[in-house]
Amino acid sequence: MADSPPEIESRAYQARAQAAIVACRAGIVKAPAGSGKTVIGAMAVLRWAAPRARLSRRKMRVACRANTIEQTEQWAKAFSRFPQISEACEITIGCYAAGASVQAADLAIFDECHHIAAMEFRKILDGFTGWRWGFSATPDREDELAPDVYQLLGPIVCEITREEVQAVGGIVAARVLIHQPNRAKEMEEAVRLLAQPMFEERARKMRAYLKGAWDDKEQMSRCIWQCLQDIAIVENTARNKAIVEIASQHAEDSLIILIGRVDHGTALAQRIPGSVLVHSGMTRKGSTSPERPQGWTRKEALVAFSAGEIRTIFATSLADEGLDVPRANALIMAAAGRSAAKAEQRTGRVLRAYHDKTHGTIHDFMDIQHYFIGAQSKQRIATYRQLGYAVTFAIEEGRP
Image 1: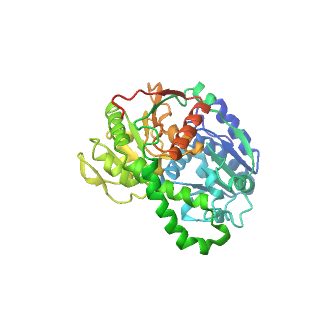
Image 2: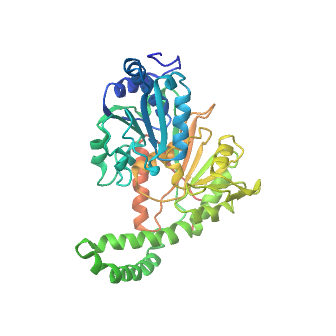
Image 3: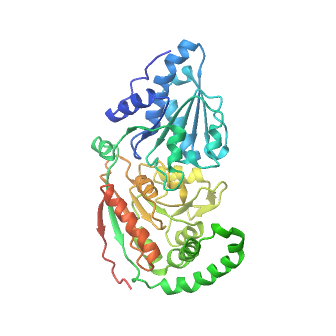
């Protein structure tokens, strides 16, 4: 039984991360998309497990949990690269949502570990006393549960920077084009007229029930956001026209269009030849295309996209994490939102190195049609600049 993994080329930052995580009983590796987190984890598991298995004369029990099916498959693939792991370990891999306890494990690994702080997921750790490692590009949550990630899994013991990964060709540069298809404030009155009666109806039904927990400002914001999803995003004629036109410019590329709602993707897909809608709730053959009128399963569509057989896919939260398609080189942010973590995760889908790819192109929108999503746009642009992306404001021909 070997103490070291087979000779597989290891980048300097990967070796540093392995050493750091193997040395601690609880800790987190922070590493961007394209850095090879699953390979780091698999090599670390072998270095940790092999000597312990030999001394205890039994295999080490390792539980690996991830957020999506695709992520569990990536971990299984990484473990399979090292045959000695099966000699030293018994590994179970599953999704957070399955809720399977890790109590019986000697070591538990949590991919996209910021999810473990969610109330419905942290029960996985009930009664667990073994070693625990986390991996994530964005371990810092943007809510009140942020401190819980570190309380549950320990501190960041190694941080890999984007610059390190890009320097060795693991990821490529990012070019962001910001489009502005709408006029300033053009939708504010329409949203107000819809949101006000919605707020009043919600207040009538819920204010007395929530009592001190009711907050006028928060509830009005929720009503505005709900209306904006319809008026300013899904049913926005000028914005949707721009999305279709941008997609046509990338007809020969591997393009991901990120949407917030399935109905938005369904409508847009009808206007973009050969595109396929892929979403997390897609279990049966439902998404169709001229090439596949009988429909695609999610796995079939992703495999075809990876192979270049599908040029354009629409994706919802599926692309936030774990979508590993290095071929993808262009992205349209058709959804809204201000989350810096999600902006980093989503744009990372098109920055993975692939053959002669020199950069990933990201299209986003300055949503000045309403102040609420206008502020979100500004936050995303600030995030892109903080990440070192090259940001350019596109000039729209015939913009209303």
